[in-house]
Amino acid sequence: MPMTPTAATGERRAIRQALADWREQGRLRAEGVAQPWARAEPGVADWHRWLDHALLALGTVLLCAGMIVFFAFNWQDLHKFSKFAVLAGAVSLLAVFAWFRPSGDMAGRAALGGAQVLAGVLLAVIGQTYQTGADAWQLFALWTLLAVPWALAARAAPHWWLVIVTGNVALLRYFSVRLGVGGMFELLFDARYARTTTLLLLGAVLLQLALWNVLCARAPALGFRGQTGARILATLVCIHAGWVGMASLFASRFDLAAFALAALALAALGWWFRQRAFDIVVLSLASLTGIVLAIAAVGKVLFEGKSDFGAFLLLGLLTIGLAAAAAAWLMRAWRLQALEQS
Image 1 (cartoon, rainbow, N blue to C red):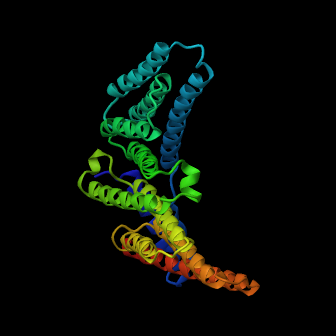
Image 2: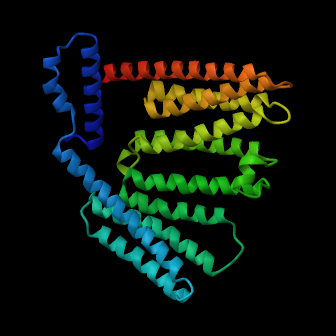
């Protein structure tokens, strides 16, 4: 069975870590490292594959950006039906091109990705042409629904990343509008229902992360594979949990329940990506968020009712200590995982 690029990269990483550990422990002489280490480094074929994928992705992004700039520059000169025809024609051409490509072909998947993005642009042009007063969350919700068939046709993980991003933007805007939050900055800095909104978003992202892991286990052939999708969702969990914790700490009245929920979400995230689906990136993000919340909680206690310059020194020392402890724990977890894989 041929090894996929992701599996090959993981195996090379494990070999490099094992060699470095053995060399540090004195179990391997310096002259005995060169040949195994060379096998662990990417070869010419790996670099060619990476360049092909990178340039293909860049070309797709530039094509979509060029279409958006074209409409922005020529908006007044184009008839509304011309706008629709150009976009619909571009989407159709990309779909036809992908149809005639072999299954799993990178060029065909890139064409499907371009069609996936341009479908959202078409919705935006329709909404801009026919002003109905609809909110932006409806645009992103419809875009998410339209992106799903393209992702199913491509059967590649990057197409599901767009579904994740647009879906969560739609959720953010939907909850903020329904709960009376006027805009993004109001949601972040001064909103009556900001904490409730963020709690709902945190619950929604946790459900998405659980669903993503189930789909990765049950339907990898549909494109639910790799670490990036889980990392995107885990990053959103850290953002929402951190914001819930900060909002609970600095509210007029400390909300212990909301702060405990944020801490529990971070703990569950750390446990899952340490014990069940190891990912050092997610563990680093969870550790950073936990450090921020811990420093904020201690700072609130120290500065509540008084201002003492020594508190800044104490917070600085605490930050250094927590960061050092987190780094040591992450390094130990990384080495244990590498030894288990080798």
